[in-house]
Length: 315
Image 1 (cartoon, rainbow, N blue to C red):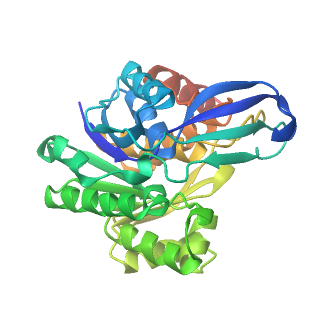
Image 2 (cartoon, rainbow, N blue to C red):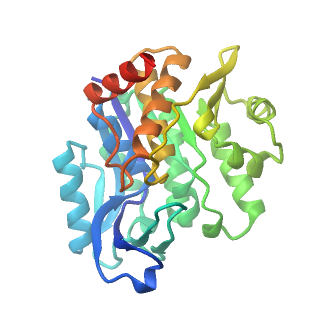
């Protein structure tokens, strides 16, 4: 069984039960959110062992997240608790035909005070893959330092690294700081997974081929540019080309689609698939995720993923 490590900030998400602006919402349903948490859940459902690094508040929301992860089978041994800072949460509107409104309550959260001692709990000689996103780089100086320390540990142990920029411009002090820091982290990883718009923000280039060329110039081995419903463009090991997406008519919520995509790429690579087949599974998981409410409820098991692929191959 492969062992994957990732790091991030989990949050409890309260989603309004009724459509409309958040200020009019009276009732909410509780979910779990966080890009790296979504990836952890998705990989675990596909049968991979996952170690998730974070810091939670010693509060009901933190205990809820810890229990949720444990029940899902995620290794929580690298999670620490903070007596002085709270677990972050967010409010999310129920949107029928547009992107939902999301309001975050994460400033000075426990996760933003993550320290590198959490890394001491991991034996990197037994890790197959590390997945990084740009979110921990943005939320605080402390979490940024730990993220780069994780990259350093992984590289020292010759562990394969994927990087999803997952840009949150509002969390950065400036666009220049965001671009320089995110691209520095990307340059240290083996495969970078930008969306086409993220790639434009980070490189100033508009085309997927040009974006891939930019990251190769930084020393990145492989680039997979997400193109939304159209699929993805790959440039890895001298192989270039497009992998088609899966058209979905009943889109419920687009949040979490990129995390599902990362799940597919990581799972496919650690299972020994070629990059094209890994990205095909990534496109499928992204499509499955947008058909449900919640950030990770649509992430499939191996059985449901195979069924989805067979049904769509038949068409």
